[in-house]
Amino acid sequence: MRHTWRNISVIFIAWLLVSSYGGVYPSSSSFGGAERVLLLTAHPDDECMFFAPTILSLLQSSVALFSVCLSVGNADGLGDTRVLELRKSLRVLGIPDQRSLVVNHPLLQDNFTEAWDSEVIAEVVGPYIDRHNITVILTFDQVGVSQHPNHISLPGGVSHLLSSPGAPSVQAFALRTVPLFHKYLGPVAPFLTKLGLCLPWTSSTNEHTHIAGFGEYLSALRAMYQHQSQLVWFRWLYVLFSRYMWVNEWFEMDVTRAQ
Image 1 (cartoon, rainbow, N blue to C red):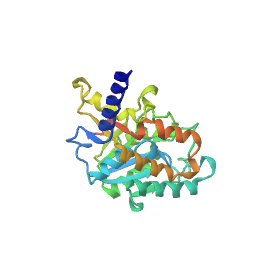
Image 2: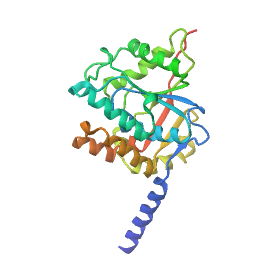
Image 3: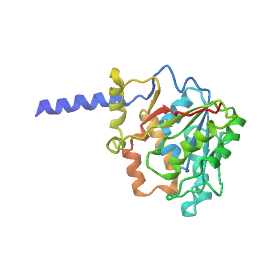
Image 4: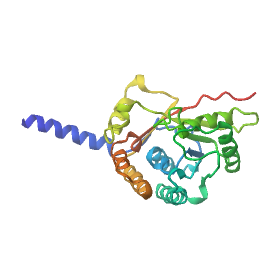
Protein backbone atom coordinates (compact mmCIF):
# COMPACT_ATOMS: atom_id res chain seq x y z
CA MET A 1 0.00 0.00 0.00
CA ARG A 2 2.87 2.33 0.87
CA HIS A 3 4.44 1.74 -2.56
CA THR A 4 1.11 2.46 -4.25
CA TRP A 5 0.80 5.84 -2.58
CA ARG A 6 4.43 6.59 -3.37
CA ASN A 7 3.82 5.85 -7.04
CA ILE A 8 0.69 8.01 -7.05
CA SER A 9 2.68 10.83 -5.43
CA VAL A 10 5.42 10.58 -8.05
CA ILE A 11 2.86 10.66 -10.87
CA PHE A 12 1.10 13.64 -9.31
CA ILE A 13 4.34 15.59 -8.87
CA ALA A 14 5.35 14.79 -12.45
CA TRP A 15 1.97 16.01 -13.66
CA LEU A 16 2.36 19.25 -11.69
CA LEU A 17 5.83 19.88 -13.11
CA VAL A 18 4.80 19.20 -16.69
CA SER A 19 1.50 21.07 -16.54
CA SER A 20 2.74 24.14 -14.67
CA TYR A 21 4.41 25.59 -17.72
CA GLY A 22 2.75 26.48 -20.98
CA GLY A 23 4.39 26.80 -24.35
CA VAL A 24 4.16 26.84 -28.12
CA TYR A 25 5.12 23.82 -30.20
CA PRO A 26 7.13 23.85 -32.37
CA SER A 27 8.86 26.38 -30.12
CA SER A 28 10.70 27.99 -33.03
CA SER A 29 7.55 29.05 -34.83
CA SER A 30 4.15 30.48 -34.05
CA PHE A 31 2.12 30.71 -37.26
CA GLY A 32 5.23 31.43 -39.30
CA GLY A 33 6.39 34.29 -37.12
CA ALA A 34 3.23 36.29 -37.81
CA GLU A 35 3.14 39.82 -36.40
CA ARG A 36 -0.50 40.83 -36.98
CA VAL A 37 -3.04 38.12 -36.20
CA LEU A 38 -6.84 38.19 -36.34
CA LEU A 39 -8.92 35.91 -34.13
CA LEU A 40 -12.30 35.40 -35.80
CA THR A 41 -15.06 34.15 -33.48
CA ALA A 42 -18.82 33.73 -33.66
CA HIS A 43 -20.13 34.70 -30.21
CA PRO A 44 -19.10 36.56 -27.07
CA ASP A 45 -17.36 34.01 -24.76
CA ASP A 46 -15.83 32.02 -27.65
CA GLU A 47 -12.57 33.88 -27.03
CA CYS A 48 -12.09 32.47 -23.52
CA MET A 49 -13.93 29.14 -23.83
CA PHE A 50 -11.97 27.94 -26.87
CA PHE A 51 -9.01 30.19 -27.71
CA ALA A 52 -7.49 31.48 -24.45
CA PRO A 53 -4.26 29.39 -24.56
CA THR A 54 -3.46 30.82 -27.99
CA ILE A 55 -4.42 34.40 -27.14
CA LEU A 56 -2.25 34.44 -24.04
CA SER A 57 0.78 32.82 -25.64
CA LEU A 58 0.68 35.10 -28.70
CA LEU A 59 0.45 38.23 -26.57
CA GLN A 60 3.41 37.04 -24.50
CA SER A 61 5.43 36.93 -27.73
CA SER A 62 4.47 40.54 -28.61
CA VAL A 63 2.18 39.66 -31.51
CA ALA A 64 -0.36 42.35 -32.44
CA LEU A 65 -3.57 40.39 -31.87
CA PHE A 66 -6.97 41.58 -33.09
CA SER A 67 -10.43 40.17 -32.39
CA VAL A 68 -13.53 40.16 -34.59
CA CYS A 69 -16.68 38.60 -33.14
CA LEU A 70 -19.33 38.18 -35.82
CA SER A 71 -22.39 38.45 -33.57
CA VAL A 72 -23.51 40.11 -30.36
CA GLY A 73 -24.87 36.81 -29.00
CA ASN A 74 -28.45 38.03 -28.95
CA ALA A 75 -30.16 34.61 -28.98
CA ASP A 76 -31.67 35.31 -25.54
CA GLY A 77 -32.14 39.05 -26.02
CA LEU A 78 -28.97 39.89 -24.07
CA GLY A 79 -26.93 41.30 -26.93
CA ASP A 80 -26.04 44.64 -25.33
CA THR A 81 -25.00 42.93 -22.10
CA ARG A 82 -22.93 40.34 -23.89
CA VAL A 83 -21.02 42.95 -25.90
CA LEU A 84 -19.97 44.65 -22.64
CA GLU A 85 -18.98 41.29 -21.17
CA LEU A 86 -16.90 40.50 -24.25
CA ARG A 87 -15.03 43.79 -23.96
CA LYS A 88 -14.22 43.03 -20.32
CA SER A 89 -13.10 39.50 -21.14
CA LEU A 90 -10.80 40.66 -23.93
CA ARG A 91 -9.24 43.23 -21.62
CA VAL A 92 -8.50 40.49 -19.06
CA LEU A 93 -6.86 38.41 -21.80
CA GLY A 94 -4.86 41.42 -23.02
CA ILE A 95 -6.69 42.63 -26.15
CA PRO A 96 -7.57 46.35 -25.91
CA ASP A 97 -10.86 47.81 -27.16
CA GLN A 98 -9.20 49.46 -30.16
CA ARG A 99 -8.16 46.04 -31.46
CA SER A 100 -11.56 44.41 -31.19
CA LEU A 101 -14.73 44.59 -33.26
CA VAL A 102 -18.17 43.18 -32.48
CA VAL A 103 -20.44 42.84 -35.51
CA ASN A 104 -24.21 43.19 -35.38
CA HIS A 105 -25.29 42.22 -38.90
CA PRO A 106 -28.88 41.13 -39.65
CA LEU A 107 -27.62 38.04 -41.48
CA LEU A 108 -25.10 37.13 -38.77
CA GLN A 109 -27.28 36.61 -35.71
CA ASP A 110 -26.66 34.05 -32.96
CA ASN A 111 -28.71 31.05 -34.07
CA PHE A 112 -28.25 27.39 -33.17
CA THR A 113 -30.25 26.13 -36.14
CA GLU A 114 -28.92 28.12 -39.11
CA ALA A 115 -25.52 28.48 -40.73
CA TRP A 116 -24.20 31.85 -41.85
CA ASP A 117 -23.59 32.76 -45.48
CA SER A 118 -19.92 32.57 -46.48
CA GLU A 119 -20.18 35.58 -48.78
CA VAL A 120 -21.61 37.77 -46.00
CA ILE A 121 -18.79 36.73 -43.66
CA ALA A 122 -16.20 37.56 -46.33
CA GLU A 123 -17.79 40.97 -46.97
CA VAL A 124 -17.62 41.83 -43.26
CA VAL A 125 -14.14 40.47 -42.52
CA GLY A 126 -12.32 41.54 -45.69
CA PRO A 127 -12.24 45.30 -45.04
CA TYR A 128 -11.09 44.77 -41.45
CA ILE A 129 -8.17 42.64 -42.66
CA ASP A 130 -7.15 45.29 -45.18
CA ARG A 131 -7.50 48.15 -42.70
CA HIS A 132 -5.31 46.49 -40.07
CA ASN A 133 -2.80 44.75 -42.36
CA ILE A 134 -3.62 41.33 -40.95
CA THR A 135 -1.25 38.53 -42.01
CA VAL A 136 -2.82 35.52 -40.24
CA ILE A 137 -6.45 34.57 -39.48
CA LEU A 138 -7.33 32.12 -36.69
CA THR A 139 -10.79 30.59 -36.45
CA PHE A 140 -12.77 27.37 -35.94
CA ASP A 141 -12.46 24.29 -38.15
CA GLN A 142 -15.33 22.71 -40.07
CA VAL A 143 -16.61 20.91 -36.96
CA GLY A 144 -16.46 24.04 -34.81
CA VAL A 145 -15.55 22.21 -31.56
CA SER A 146 -19.22 22.05 -30.49
CA GLN A 147 -20.80 21.60 -33.94
CA HIS A 148 -22.57 24.93 -33.55
CA PRO A 149 -23.61 25.97 -37.09
CA ASN A 150 -22.33 29.52 -36.55
CA HIS A 151 -18.89 28.18 -35.59
CA ILE A 152 -18.88 25.86 -38.59
CA SER A 153 -19.69 28.77 -40.91
CA LEU A 154 -16.51 30.69 -40.12
CA PRO A 155 -13.92 28.59 -42.01
CA GLY A 156 -16.22 28.65 -45.03
CA GLY A 157 -16.34 32.44 -44.87
CA VAL A 158 -12.55 32.66 -44.56
CA SER A 159 -12.06 30.27 -47.50
CA HIS A 160 -14.52 32.29 -49.60
CA LEU A 161 -12.64 35.50 -48.81
CA LEU A 162 -9.17 34.12 -49.52
CA SER A 163 -10.18 32.31 -52.71
CA SER A 164 -11.79 35.40 -54.25
CA PRO A 165 -10.02 37.47 -56.94
CA GLY A 166 -7.90 40.20 -55.35
CA ALA A 167 -7.93 38.44 -51.98
CA PRO A 168 -5.40 39.57 -49.38
CA SER A 169 -2.23 37.52 -49.00
CA VAL A 170 -3.13 36.03 -45.64
CA GLN A 171 -2.57 32.64 -44.03
CA ALA A 172 -5.48 30.98 -42.29
CA PHE A 173 -5.36 28.43 -39.47
CA ALA A 174 -8.22 26.42 -37.95
CA LEU A 175 -8.58 25.18 -34.38
CA ARG A 176 -8.63 21.40 -34.48
CA THR A 177 -11.72 19.71 -33.03
CA VAL A 178 -10.69 16.66 -31.03
CA PRO A 179 -12.80 13.53 -30.35
CA LEU A 180 -15.27 13.71 -27.48
CA PHE A 181 -13.15 11.63 -25.10
CA HIS A 182 -10.17 13.98 -25.48
CA LYS A 183 -12.34 17.09 -25.29
CA TYR A 184 -12.98 16.80 -21.55
CA LEU A 185 -9.62 15.73 -20.15
CA GLY A 186 -9.26 19.09 -18.44
CA PRO A 187 -5.98 19.63 -16.57
CA VAL A 188 -4.69 16.25 -17.73
CA ALA A 189 -4.68 17.54 -21.33
CA PRO A 190 -1.41 19.55 -21.18
CA PHE A 191 0.42 16.61 -19.61
CA LEU A 192 -0.76 14.14 -22.27
CA THR A 193 -0.26 16.63 -25.09
CA LYS A 194 3.35 17.28 -24.10
CA LEU A 195 4.01 13.57 -23.86
CA GLY A 196 2.47 13.07 -27.28
CA LEU A 197 4.60 15.82 -28.80
CA CYS A 198 7.71 13.94 -27.68
CA LEU A 199 6.84 11.05 -30.01
CA PRO A 200 8.56 11.43 -33.40
CA TRP A 201 5.59 10.19 -35.43
CA THR A 202 3.27 12.84 -33.95
CA SER A 203 5.32 15.86 -34.98
CA SER A 204 4.17 17.93 -37.94
CA THR A 205 5.53 21.14 -39.42
CA ASN A 206 1.98 22.09 -40.37
CA GLU A 207 0.66 21.92 -36.79
CA HIS A 208 0.95 24.59 -34.11
CA THR A 209 0.14 23.72 -30.51
CA HIS A 210 -0.40 26.27 -27.75
CA ILE A 211 -0.47 24.90 -24.20
CA ALA A 212 -1.51 26.90 -21.15
CA GLY A 213 0.17 26.65 -17.77
CA PHE A 214 -1.64 27.21 -14.48
CA GLY A 215 -1.20 30.98 -14.73
CA GLU A 216 -2.71 31.12 -18.19
CA TYR A 217 -5.57 28.85 -17.11
CA LEU A 218 -6.37 31.20 -14.22
CA SER A 219 -6.36 34.14 -16.65
CA ALA A 220 -8.82 32.27 -18.86
CA LEU A 221 -11.03 31.67 -15.82
CA ARG A 222 -10.95 35.37 -14.96
CA ALA A 223 -11.93 36.17 -18.54
CA MET A 224 -14.81 33.70 -18.43
CA TYR A 225 -15.97 35.24 -15.16
CA GLN A 226 -16.63 38.50 -17.04
CA HIS A 227 -19.44 36.72 -18.91
CA GLN A 228 -21.78 36.84 -15.92
CA SER A 229 -24.91 36.38 -18.03
CA GLN A 230 -23.58 33.03 -19.26
CA LEU A 231 -22.36 31.48 -16.01
CA VAL A 232 -24.90 28.71 -15.70
CA TRP A 233 -23.94 25.41 -14.06
CA PHE A 234 -22.91 23.53 -17.20
CA ARG A 235 -20.45 26.26 -18.20
CA TRP A 236 -18.72 25.86 -14.85
CA LEU A 237 -18.35 22.17 -15.68
CA TYR A 238 -16.98 23.16 -19.08
CA VAL A 239 -14.26 25.46 -17.72
CA LEU A 240 -13.24 22.78 -15.21
CA PHE A 241 -12.96 19.90 -17.68
CA SER A 242 -12.53 21.32 -21.19
CA ARG A 243 -9.29 20.62 -23.00
CA TYR A 244 -9.67 23.95 -24.83
CA MET A 245 -9.04 25.87 -21.64
CA TRP A 246 -5.57 24.29 -21.67
CA VAL A 247 -4.62 23.21 -25.19
CA ASN A 248 -5.16 24.60 -28.69
CA GLU A 249 -3.99 22.67 -31.74
CA TRP A 250 -3.97 24.44 -35.09
CA PHE A 251 -3.60 23.35 -38.69
CA GLU A 252 -3.27 25.51 -41.78
CA MET A 253 -6.41 25.71 -43.87
CA ASP A 254 -6.18 24.48 -47.45
CA VAL A 255 -7.43 27.42 -49.51
CA THR A 256 -7.50 27.41 -53.33
CA ARG A 257 -6.32 30.87 -54.35
CA ALA A 258 -7.81 32.65 -57.35
CA GLN A 259 -5.44 32.94 -60.29
